[in-house]
Amino acid sequence: MMTTVQTPELWAAALHQAATLLQHSRCPLLISHPRPDGDTVGSALALRLALIRLGKAPQLACAHPLPEALACLPGAAAYQNVAPADEDLDLVVAVDLSDLNRSGGIYRETWRGKFPLLVIDHHETNEHFGDVNLVDPAAVATALPMTALIDVLGVPLDDAMATCLLAAVLTDTRGLRTANTSPEVLHFVGRLIEAGGDYAGVMEKTLDSVPYQQMRAWGVALGNLRLDGALAWTTFPLAEKLSLGIADHDDLDLGNLISRVAEAQVMATFLEMRDGTVKVSLRSRPGYNVAPIAKALGGGGHQQAAGCSIPGTLDDAQARVLPLLRTALLKAAG
Ligand code: 5GP
Ligand code: MN
Image (tube, rainbow, N blue to C red; front, side, top):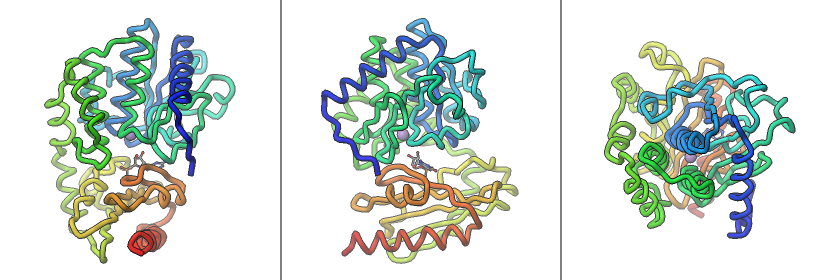
């Protein structure tokens, strides 16, 4: 796992280098990860608005369409699901991506060496794959290093930018409930509200709104819920997605749903995908770290929320992942 010692000097240098890349760019491409969440979208949208203020022509790409809750954020309609032509970009910015696979096919390998790559992220599993890496694993959301960068660029936060950043920080902290919600995070949220961000609107549209079909799908997932000691997990077969009309890429937010099982310390969800893989979401309570397990399986994430995709059937994926989780539980207990 990538560990970097982050001194204030190194951080200031990374901020300066990131700002310089953006200042020299005319048409940067901002990439959000597939199954886009509030942080990858909100942080990218805020940067886009800041760059427009600086007279630039930023572009946005994400392999998957935005969920309804995020599609109404300022500027969200600008997202494309394919990369622009090479003539139309001069810088690539990866937002909330811990590795390049997380671009979902948007990033082209031919861009290596042709266009500079700027990485803005907060995953402890981040591979520092950019030419400049603004990666703060201590940050609760990419929105924080993003805001530090916007500050260095000298663009004042307006209400639209603040609303986008609120969507990022409020969703990644599940409504300011994760263990890493520090006084600094609450000050940051206060700053965003002061700048005119729509706190109540973001809460209502993201954390407090669940599409009807998704809630019905939760019924299926809760029916499949299992508990073994301090391990809780559920499965979601492809056939159920098809019968409920759920899009293949929609993860139904199942990881966050079952992370609330009181008896469990570690939780997992297994979603069968159309391409013959299983999308696995891992969650844990403080004291248990699921990031290395996801990383060892080719994915990544944070201590309390991580994920990966595994080829094979639901049974195959459970047979691979559940023993690793049981071992992690035993190790932490011992
Ligand atoms: P979720 O389980 O909600 O999809 O994701 C939880 C966390 O793990 C998020 O921070 C997400 O970025 C990360 N994550 C989920 N799946 C993958 C994956 O396949 N690869 C990587 N690198 N990170 C993932
Ligand atoms: Mn994030």
